[in-house]
Figure 1 (cartoon, rainbow, N blue to C red):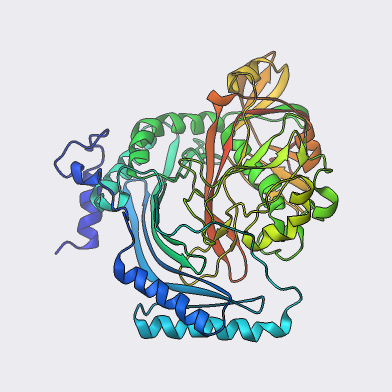
Figure 2 (cartoon, rainbow, N blue to C red; figure 1 turned 180 degrees about the vertical axis):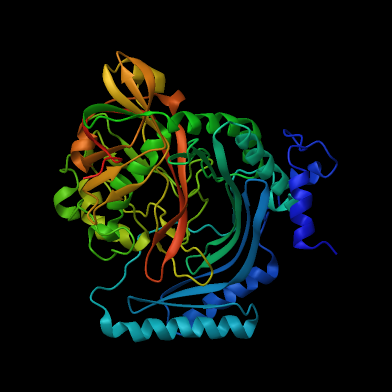
Length: 538
């Protein structure tokens, strides 16, 4: 039997021995055949239909049920050691029932006829109990049925088919490469994977089987000064993705880790920024977080109506009756869409937890707010707006639950900025800037509960003089009011500069739930933003 001590020692000795690239061994062929549900199996379908039938017999006008399995695997390493390997695997059924305009929900891990019937009965009873607190009956926007649908996220190598030894060896090889750079003393690499098998049915006639995979491989590299009085960190270098093990191979961590380590060592000796007004050129890896916090969260409709405040506050983009078609959010160059069908997106899905097939929709058009993120229930709240615009009243597919035991509610789709018409990129924006700062990667940040006043840092800062990079800076953070910041947008990259920024765990609700989300970004320039020095002491 191999003990954990033996395993750690073996992994460390094997560091650097891994040949990276496309898998060449015989087992590789099986890795290219990820487990994807081609069709829902008969026992699962029978249990889902039993749940719906039980709910309807109890008095539900509508019901849906999810039998969901969620697998997670994470490998944690630091320097040349494996710190931990964590696995979890859970399966069960969540049932939602609508009775007299009120929701009820119940869940069970007992996937038997008795367990399903008991949970469906509890969901109906909960809905009836909620009637006393009803202020407005729930109405659902129309949605076509999908009687035998399947969908899979676009992965080619199932990360759960890769051995722990291969994963840990890769991570330690990356750490070892970073540690070879003078001044670098600490390195941590994680490999995190999620696989969801979602089986769904509703009383509208939809029966849907889906398989989703997400991957995240964060690294943090720390350089320390010779006298150990100072340090600098380079992190946020690899983005989460809605893909599989193939994305890990493409990131080639052992090769890129040395470059990131050299950037950390250089950052250690960088000049501290002089506070003032600068033109900011933001790389997609930095803009993504700012977009997430200042645009994506405040355009969640439940926050706008004040029904949701947990984790991210409410919203200044409110009330909808006053801001839709009227609020100038940014410059005319600013176009923002929501889209849960974007390939590789962490929030991408074939059908949401209302049974809706998502499609791209405008949130901000030419700088003006035109829509919100909605579910079937929430789309009816904007029925007046859609009629005014001669648009169909339909959900934007934003219903999601992070587990079979969680009730679905509105979660963020992939919210992205539309590329500009000119085919330019990050270097072009720098070349067009006389005095500014180019920022890459995410750093510390803060934003108020209305999402209006913010302060954001970054991972890597470069001073721009006369259209050229003249060196690294440090201690940089930019402050803004959201509409001023986006109103100062005067240049943005084209389609070729479009990159996906993502977050692996975004919290909302009470009890809290987490979802993953991607933001498609291009580099942007924002004129004359206020920059402070975070290293100065009062």
